[in-house]
Image (cartoon, rainbow, N blue to C red; front, side, top):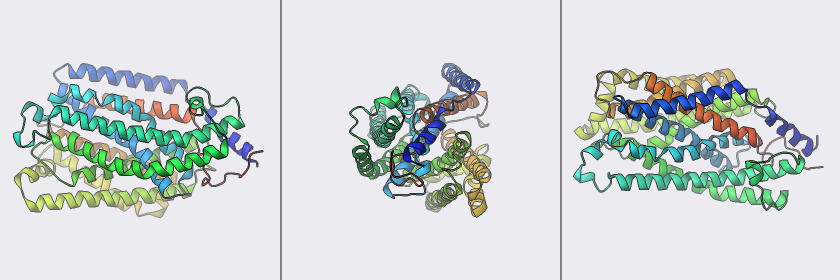
Length: 421
């Protein structure tokens, strides 16, 4: 098989459009979630709406960023095994522009979400003040997302150009705009690899810094008297754990829908499963290290945060469920090699982890703000969650519809023919 035939076979997989009823259903959920949120913040349940928005902003923005971070890791390590899933991982970044647009909305809910806005703490006012917090977080996200999209641009450009070279009718619109000033396949391929290898380590370092800051500012400051120097690291590491599990779900569904069985095999599932297992242990270690210091230090301003979550109803059952689902249970299940090799079992445990990590974000946010005796979870939280889910799926489907499903110009992609005829 020539490279031209191989590329045409890959591009043919992009021709499958998502079912129209699915797209309409997703848009309906997006609109419904938006309407529920807008109505919610104007009514007596405003706090619930703001809590749900913050939880889902953190959750889905984290998944989106983790996809591009994994692609950067694959680039830094020259990982051949991960090349077939690199493009699908990059597709998560399609949500980043939406995340950036959603961030300023949190400014409107500052008084509902952040107790230190209503009751300033003089000792922390230099750090916890509205202009400085939103300026630093907004700037951090802008730079991180911008660098992520620049990395994505350099990854996509040679693939789109090569696809256009093979099929003149392919890649119009957004995809076509990426190849202005095209200088030939070999030059563009070399330039792309150099740019990605340069940007990737910078992106990884910046991710650790910015998401640590987001953890401190948008989660830890909800309980302004509490602090943990390890929380930022825990937040960005747990975010990668979540992202890897979400990626497993994404590639298993995409493999089936786009007929990528030849390109994505049990090798990718096994290695991705091992990464999920590794980050399960790392995230659990960060959790335990943080908990141990707080618990045995027994300082009131630190231990109160933990006691409220592991002893007081209604939060205690939820916190213990997170521990069981995300760490202990996942650890035991992922010990099995067969679980990691089989798509069905890997999908199941990944779905459980993703659900557990959403609950973990819920436990981090809501007990700090909710004064009632019962955990708030009803139609407001469900519809806002479904709105975020639908928005995320829509942008991901748009991405995979417009760009090659595999990094066809990548020299490390296994099974790629060497010449174009």
